[in-house]
Image 1 (spheres, helix red, strand yellow):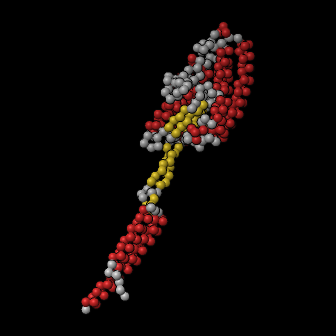
Image 2 (cartoon, helix red, strand yellow):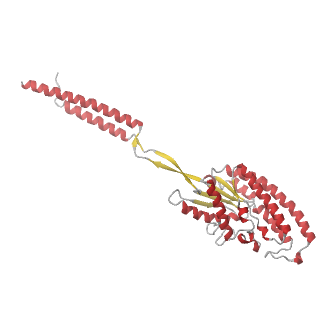
Image 3 (spheres, one colour):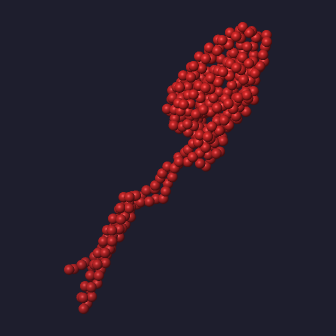
Length: 339
């Protein structure tokens, strides 16, 4: 049997080609494994503030209805704090979409409009202050009907017991109807919020600024009863799926210190916003949050890549073995021809 002189070279070249092809094909069958890793954190990576003038920072230095980010509201206080805490981790985003003057009716309309959907869908925590405008305007009117002017001074010349009693009777009904309506609205608000976000929802209770008028027991008792009922509505509706931030309890007995009620303004002052920030922060930290990162491993062959590489090596082994055998045969034939 005759063998071409370059047969060995051809077999060796074929073996090299097989190995090379296997390597090249395996390069197209590699992967970098990745997985999601959950990290726990005390504070939310993204927080959204909603509601009324309390959340917007109304009355603070630097406040503007079209720019809520340049006053020292509790939203901005917490935004700064959480940005510092989460630096180098997941980062932090704070969005404030509160609207001064909004009642619970206004808030429902805003929710249903879809304007908040993007922010709600992307939030880890949603903090809401609502209900004050449903109630406090009626109660401030009551204060004025008793002869108390906007400076908080009682004018005995303006006080009429019969008129005051009549005002109480009228406003008692008005306030109760407002509270009944607020109760209905809280069911709608919780439903609209919870179906638009997977984040945790928090609703603040309302502090009682009218406790400041301690010289008018009929006012403070009335206020305590009605605002107490509003907060009970907020607390009971929490069973629908949100959490309560009890601002009212932390403000109890401190209306003169933490609000501007002395100037006939029910809104929190700078110290009040600092106090609310601490209350909100405490509640958030006892809740806990998380964020997810995508981690990457070292480059490796896929299952198909491993099969292709193994097949190429086996093929190369066969060819190399054939080349060795052919070489031995040729050497023997050459020796015999010399003999």
